[in-house]
Length: 299
Length: 187
Image (tube, rainbow over all chains, first blue to last red; front, side):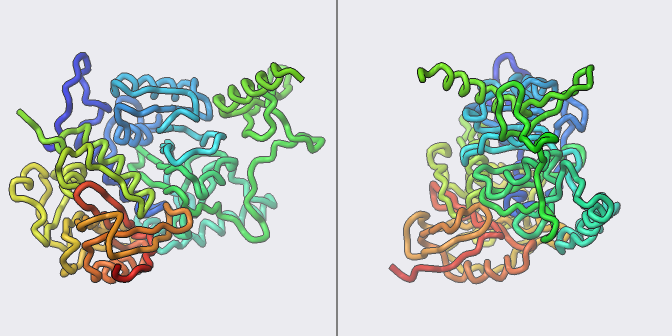
């Protein structure tokens, strides 16, 4: 053993659940992923006490990064209290004694997320870990991994561009709603995990390091801070984010906080009517607090 | 049993986080001296990253014989090793692994020990991913051949080597994507 752990009373597991060898494997892959932006580094993904596909890749990254002084935020589709987020947060609290957890984006140093990047701009003191189901954007055009690896190495994405072009021919626009293929530092194209288009521009020149972990597919990749991230598009059909305007051309607002510049989730009532609400629950709470403070002030 | 700090899991976690910061922000000097308790930074980094799965080359005799069993890494030829520990004072007299087009992660991580990071006769201007605009780096004790050889090694991305410079207490990363311009002469 070349990494002696502290014995922790009342906890039969190593700090961070993973044994130190597993962490070293993930750590070496993380460093190579940062050094080769956008390249999917293969790693020996461990069995976790949850099904593959429930965020085991992101979890292994988090557990290899985390230290006792960490302030962790776990979100699932923007929400801190949906099932996946609550379970992962509980698991990390149990296996990493001393770690604090928070729901506030402003307070955290490490964010594990499924399908969203927080609305609040990230800082250089933060690391975002995204859970990835399908890491390879080329899988839709090439079934052989060997060939895909060559295509990635050569930065040959012509077939992916043809796929996008076919969309334009059929529907007059690119119809990819999430997992939008994004080119990192002018070479590798990544699948940025199922974040909406809304979040793709946040990858570009981000202040924070963004890591991607695919546990089932055994890949780790990264977008380092201050790195170019360009969604694939054509000069005459530019990339665009989701449009939240109603039939009259007005931007829809969150029914809860009234925010008109956040990513909205759509809720359909039994009557067939639709309501919209911020997807990022911490952002929504902050906006409500702000609104209340402004109202409370004397005119 | 008294275990030296660098072999402790919690210290390795802290060193690793500094490595993450270093590689994310090339040219930024990260101080690890406080947590490694007198050990030399290069040795602490090796302790953090090595285990029985890794191959390590030691062309300049940087690693004490007593450390090899603890590191557990397999000794390997310079041109095949995943990690190379070297001395910056000596000219590079070897060719490290550069990886392949399909698997660029097999390009070596070269750990180079220099006299001093943050000041010295060599002044570098850095640009690339992880750097907002440009970053300056001064250092002492790096044989000039390293920079010319590195430029050759990283010439055809995604192939290349990732360099980690260290003095006794500090680390600085120069991943393969970092463009280096030598700006200063002797001072």
